Image 1: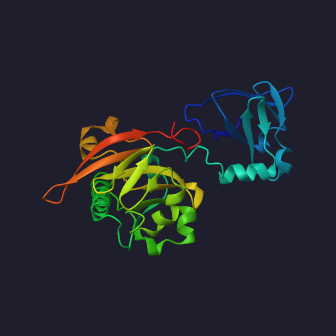
Image 2 (image 1 turned 90 degrees about the vertical axis):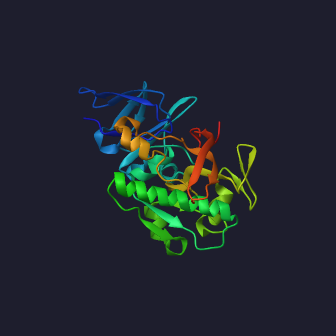
Length: 279
């Protein structure tokens, strides 16, 4: 039986398997709404994708266990070895399996939360981000019966970046990882303002929660100032309530009460498109 993985950027893609033709030995596949896919090379010598016959066993010089195919306006193309490596490394930032969002998807694979050790640009922003982390730790412990892994920005190693989704808390002043990445994120962040999708917000009472391919390792996620987007009332309700609430990026208006607790209001939220860009 064919073993193939959909790696296309559109999570709605429908990959319809037809199977091996016993007489020709060709793997026959039809697709609908698929932009890219990979197929194990040892399944068949060739594959027929939507009527186009392409090499499989010999593709990419026979050097990779998976063969990658990308659809263009003229039809399906098989990627050569170097192009396949570039596709795997995701230098073009395309949405794909395990890298398609939303925010909560980052917690389905190994992750680590990273607190800053520097001086925050905005004390109010720092207090809010710390409250987000504290709430995530509390709810994760209570409802998922586990301890959230938390380290400081000084403890992040190359191996951490290679192996884990990074969940960063703070601002570019307090967190060295945010400072290192902020120029490559789809926002503009200064000491006084955050600009998202052309609109500017005051950092003293607004924060951004987002998920994005990690600029230091585009095969993993970075999340800024967010844990799970479902909370205690959702866990108390039923499993049917445990779904993502914010999409890929959101602007949160926050207000700290006298008792130290924060009131949060989502004033804008959106999903990035297949190229990790705002529509």
